[in-house]
Length: 213
Ligand code: ADP
Ligand code: MG
Ligand code: MG
Image (cartoon, rainbow, N blue to C red; front, side, top):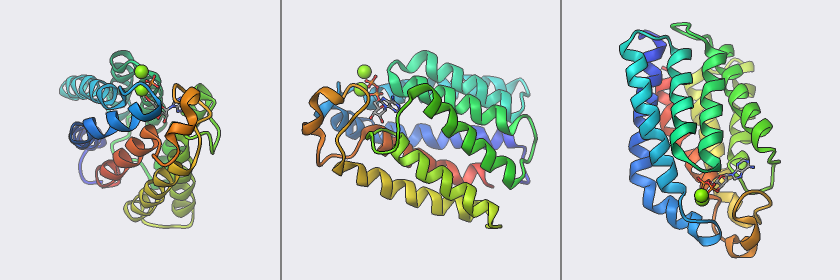
């Protein structure tokens, strides 16, 4: 990485903010089919708070780990909803794993992705197949870690893993939700992908070029 990693993280959050603002309505409609319809709004509230906190931290010269911790805490605090708590905790865990190093090694990035996934699974207790964001997250994390361990260039590994996550998010349309607010109306959600898995695949796709630069 030629730039300091805190700046790269800020750029990743900026790209996330833009893609979430664009997708707000679509994510809301998806969540309204069996959930309460607030996924788009919640993600926008979360990323807006995260960006504000991250910019402030960056402006004070914080390192990447501290920038991501501030972003995660603001996201969890302001988003409301299940996904906000999970995204916030996941970002903080990612930050703790990369630390304030100015250019994390590929192995450190893979460990950070794993820490993000582990924290979300620990907190939410969803398993693969429950029709949650975890169904896009686990394929992403294992693909990225596996490719990096096999010596792949991180940018390329991230791209491949993000493609897997996108396919996995789309494949959740065939599942019935077993966790979260969509469970009582589970049958209605058949044929529609999980909103949280969809937004996660979207976010990881746009973050990749920044986090692996
Ligand atoms: P809420 O359900 O509180 O309204 P959102 O609408 O923002 O929150 O987020 C809904 C998404 O959260 C779901 O589509 C699913 O991906 C994710 N989700 C719900 N419960 C869990 C859980 N226990 N573990 C992981 N993800 C979950
Ligand atoms: Mg909701
Ligand atoms: Mg809600």
